[in-house]
Length: 336
Figure (spheres, one colour):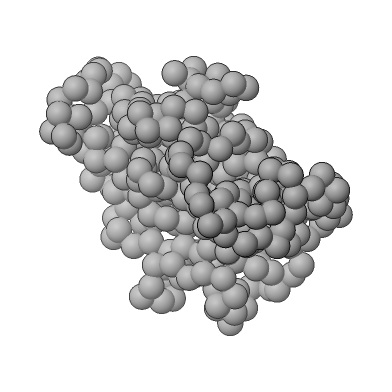
């Protein structure tokens, strides 16, 4: 099937590319600028990705990155992040991180100060504190208000199913139902509650890195981990081929490893736009109503993006900075 997938892709002329390159999901231009400035100052691609994602964490980009956003069922904000070195294939990631605002920094610390790939929950927070990261309350007045309104609205929407009391009408605590309702239809998603920043950086010598940061799905079940901190799902980098990063409904997207698939397609000489589109198409065959998008860049600096068209989401915006522009430029792609 994979061979067929490769042969069925439209291989387009790549055209002109320019290195170095920074590309990230959504119109988070300040994050792009921070990453680009890092590269221009002589920083590594890992430095660029870390600084770009950290800027979004500090700015609370769209309320979906960093502290004070996406409270879970208990009202707490937790963070997920990952960073990947495309030269060594090392990955550092954290999930369900509490009390620490700089999730991408902790992810890099996991990569550089342990032999592990992913740390989660309270233990990840303790690790961060031991590494010198400051413990702070991630709750804000805004996140408290979001949580309060959710409780007043009978905990709608939520991510529960096959439980009682009826999760479409009532808050928990919930217990499992004796009988399950069949179906795997994608849950309708608020497109503004899944705006993960995914970032790719490539320097003049072709070194590649990728990273992600998010506060996850709003009103998620405590302990939930989405695609963002999972290598191959939220992002993937290989300096011999390129990198990709995803955003959207992570619970669905992580089942298909779209970032890994896109990079492997680019390794087989697929155009980055075609690679992104093929990876989105694979998910779409199973979940036609899923919300998601993907950015892709190959090792020579050619880039592209793709997204699934759903009500309220017909075009995906992303940022690019390269030596031709030297400033962050807003790009867009029509969803299909």
